[in-house]
Amino acid sequence: QVQLVESGGGLVQAGGSLRLSCAASRITSSIGLMGWYRQAPGKQRELVATITRLRITNYIDSVKGRFTISRDNDKNTVYLQMNSLKPEDTAVYYCLSKVVLTNYWGQGTQVTVSS
Image (cartoon, rainbow, N blue to C red; front, side, top):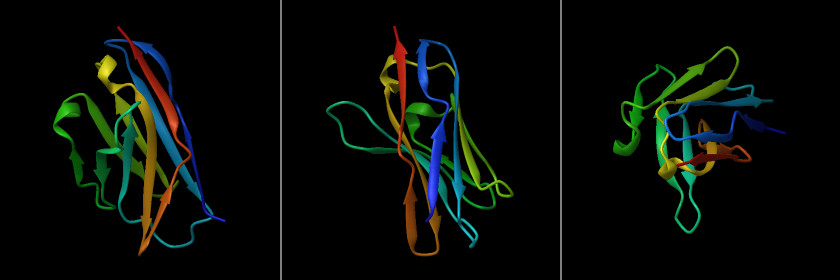
């Protein structure tokens, strides 16, 4: 069974940094698009960043210049480097991997940024 395991979340002070990782296992086909979504309390899930297999990236405006998405295709792993964190970044972060027509989701990791 396909598994996406996330790690790297935690509690940080505003202005600090975190690095999220999401490793996909049991996937024999090449992963296409990978990305990160987040859901804050009382809000809908929103896309944060995506990266194609050729490493073309896309970010929502609120994280541009602060977050960097990257991937290691050999390890089937996607990363999200988060710098200059703000309290409004507090959310559960979910990773996504697309394989042909199938989407796979991670279990979510909590990111909390204190003021």
